[in-house]
Image 1 (tube, rainbow, N blue to C red):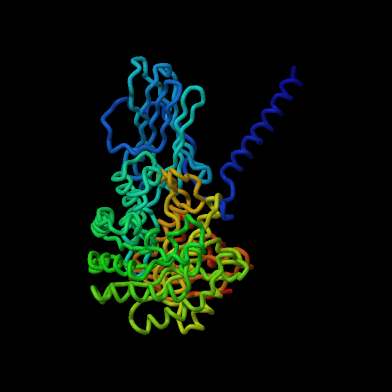
Image 2 (image 1 turned 90 degrees about the horizontal axis):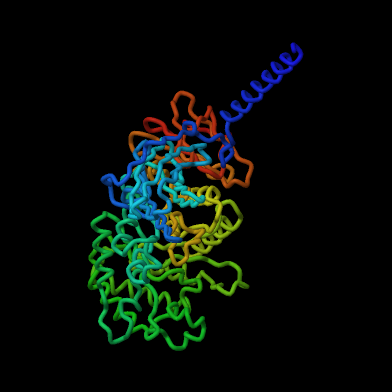
Length: 583
């Protein structure tokens, strides 16, 4: 008997040790996706009585998920104006359920973020005996920034999930730098429900999109407009101004710059000799007949050129497949348009469509971009355009970005142009891994601002119900955020009111720039993720608050070694370049 008791005690002893080791490992936690231990929330908890039935709703219903099958109907969403919430704030959800067969069954709503090891849930019993629709409401909250998943779990393992973002709301960025997105509001106006926000009317979509943009703090949207053919489907038809009048007003009311992409040719206005040079469904890329374009441009200028909040971008990527014609054709169109608009308002801001500079002559889209740069130089000298623009898609951490940028810079300089003060009016990355997506995009934005450009437009802003699998987008078709949306909000929150003061390091081993809003200094730190990183040494006599790409606090020592994922170092007061050194 003593032997058995002794054996049992030994087994209990080792069990306790094993459990303690597991708990220790749990506290240490997994490594963050960028290689550092992530911040974590409190442990999992279940709150069985925190769901109300058919109570008065605390806000408007924002539907994210809809299920209708086998006599069961479920609408699942949040109560609010967008899928973004302040840290520590209430995140209210609702589940609108019809289905008598669910009566008396248990339901759960979970609220999770795997990378932050965050897991909450509410359990409740469904009351559906009368077969009527009943609404179940509850709420969660989170203290750390990130993308959190709400999941409704019903009997039979029916699961409906959607994502919300937790990140502070920003004030609109100052005009020191233009932080833009391409939200395609006009496509919601004119292309049908497949291009509105999922489950929303056109008016609701417009409101949700603008609310979300306002939360990020963006100060500019780039729109391809209700294109010429939509505004004037036949040559003899009057121009329909309804949709653009609406967009001009709502952007003005919201304090947003409207970057109007004036482009696209109706079939009836295209130069006949060029139609055979492109695919039949790309007729809109064909250079328009001069007289017909000039008549349309004059009408647009007469109606809108005096609107101070509109920037005019003339065509999109004219050195690529989106313009079928010669460089001379495009430069003539650009010059004529500039003269038409400046005759109405000499002080407006107008510039050519962004160049892509496709370098490979074997690429079917290849055009020599040098004539465009030379033409821009002449038009700048004549005061007809204000700047020029470029587009660089793809990842930051490979050769394509820097090779393309170097070629653009060489061609611009050959034409006597500077890269300072230019616009990057379209840049993005198609990537399914959200962490990789966010890292590359934020590095590109910070590189653009750190190298003295004046605008960055994130492409794309949202997916469409008609094409929901969009690896470019930072929000899905219901405006549910991806990680890049949280990171972009944090970037604008840290730098949106700041002026750039100095560059501390400008190598692919370490990019570091110093910004200030007059009371604080913010240092951005990242690298290309490929080169052996350098080290930024911090001032020893100054307290620093450090934040990861998502705005969550992290610990740093006397120096920082960068990765592709940017970090932000915040100091009180204004620091000098000499406060830092690079090792």
